[in-house]
Image (cartoon, rainbow over all chains, first blue to last red; front, side, top):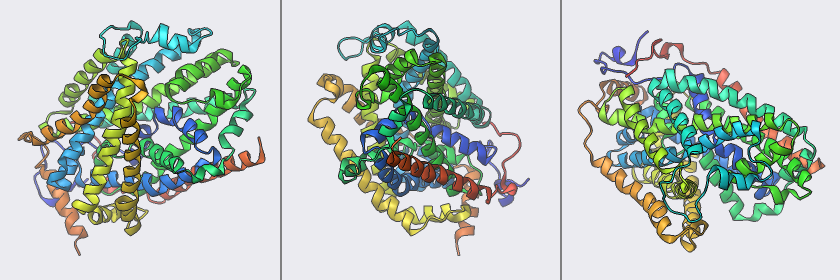
Length: 525
Length: 45
């Protein structure tokens, strides 16, 4: 077999970059990253609340005009520049490295709270068997399980029922991350994702046979055409697609950097994007069939029981589990699905940080994974399994999504499109060996449509959060853990950019130089 | 289910899952380039 480095006669780097062994494993891992908690607990309610069946139109428009084009942008950057987010952006343009570190820090914040939700879901998988919540799922969640403090803040008063499962989640995750791309990430996704799909399909089938399921499906699919005239509905569609596809926070850049050189980037990306949406539709059917049952059992209307997020997963679903025939099985399938969906996403989020450290310092996989995952796990287990963990999680999530991911994405697409003017180069790279060609239309979608949609969403988020305190939390608390955290990400990203690259780092990797030289020769007329 | 809800259900399945099916067919027509497969043993760093 001829490797790119040996073919060009350049001495290979002492250690080659890891790769996914097959395209199928890359696709599975990318789908595993995209299919997360949001697909299950966010999409069904967003669709229902924004026009029901009519939401399909803005959803498809957002998927095709922004979601998939931005996904391909990430693929092009990661694959062409063959590095973690900071290294790939640095190779794209020296001034762009800070974007990569910003994305790494966003992933750090998400990782420390995301693991906690997985721990909750793992405990609820067991609680489904014992029906530990009794007749009051809300009271059990806030009181018995989370022991939520009355006032938001940060108290290091620990809740053992969350601490220990969180520790187990982190141990499993660290083992996967230390094992590397092929032995860890690929294998974990190869096991978790098929399990997730099988469990979720069984859950949907079981939900469809519950009394009242048809009413739930009617509520979910009946279109409200007037909603299409509301700009907020279109913003909700773009916002959902943007977060759902895991674009613009380094994950897809990192994963595509592990692909071999001649690969069908756009063809693979289409499968990832439509598989993610296909799972969301399945989740909508399953969740609303179950909510239809819940509404019928309670003698109420669907809109009185329909909810999203923590309320759907940890209050509504336990209630359904208590009342449904074979409820314990349903609970195990639902919460087990949350665990697997969460794990595959958490792995991808951590890989962004591990790859960045590995590239910057030139450390081994094991050293980098331990240097990243152990501190992240410690911070996560110190801050979140406490009586104030829910407040902190909620605030981090709200502010990092708006002023980390969204703001970072807007800055990135504007800089890449209009300042560094790299879209033509990236278009050529995408078209080198892809089955679906991306040319002028793609550049317009990335350079014009996506920034406009992102700017509109960011503006809305800014106005909403500046007008009144988020969730009524104390202003000082939000100033530190919301606005302060979001601002600190930018400052630390600048500092990390200014830290010199280690002599052992991948910044001057001869293997990459050889590949880049050969590809430049191929594309130069 | 009401006729309009069934219609939207069918359209959603056809467009999204149909899109997935088409993407898979397209990918199967463009198999991996065997000459560019990575080494058998992962070069762990």
